[in-house]
Image 1 (cartoon, rainbow, N blue to C red):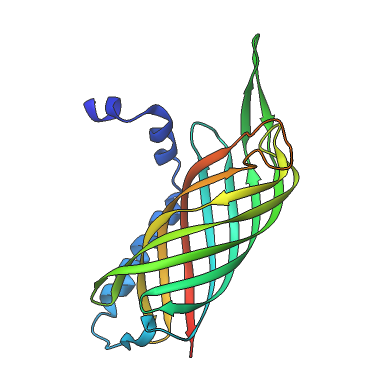
Image 2 (cartoon, rainbow, N blue to C red):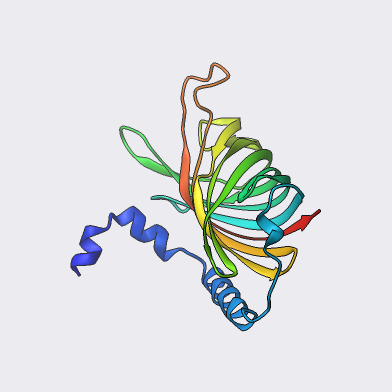
Length: 214
C-alpha cells in the first residue's frame, strides 16, 4: 500500500494502461534471444559504415489522460560511428481518446480522433553489450502534422521529442529486433505566432526490426 501512495496517480494510471500485447512481445523476444544464444552471429553489425533500415510500431499512453497515440515508423540511416547510428523516419500516427478541458465553471471531455504525418531523426548509441544483447540510448526529435488541431486549442503542426532507452537483440547476422521505452513530448513550442502552447506528454513503448546493409 505504501508503494502505491509513493507513486503519483497519473503515473500509476499510465503504467496500468501498458498494453498486455506489448508485454507478450517482450517475453517472446527474450525467449527467442535465449534459444538462439548459441549461434555465433557476426559482431560487425555495430561497426562504422553500412546502411540501416527499420520498421516499427510505437504506442504512447498520455500522462493523466485517456489520450493515446499509435505510430507506424519507417526509418533509414547509417552507422555514423562504431556503436552509433543516425536515422531519419517517416511517421504515420493516429490519436484516440478524450481530453479533459477545464474552465472556471465546469469541465468537458473533447474527443480527439486524429491522423498525422511526420518526419523525425534519431541518434542511437549502444554503450553496453551483453553477449548478443545490446542496451541503447535514444535521442530524437521531429515534427508531426495532424489534420485537426492537436491537442485541443493547439496547432496542426507540432514539434516532437523522444528520448528513450531499450534493448537490441540479434535475429541473425544482419538483423536486429529492438524494443524500448521513451518519454514522448509534443507541442508547438509557441511557434507560428500561436498564443498558447498546449502539450501532449506520455509514456512511449516501441518495437521494431532493424536491418543492416553493407
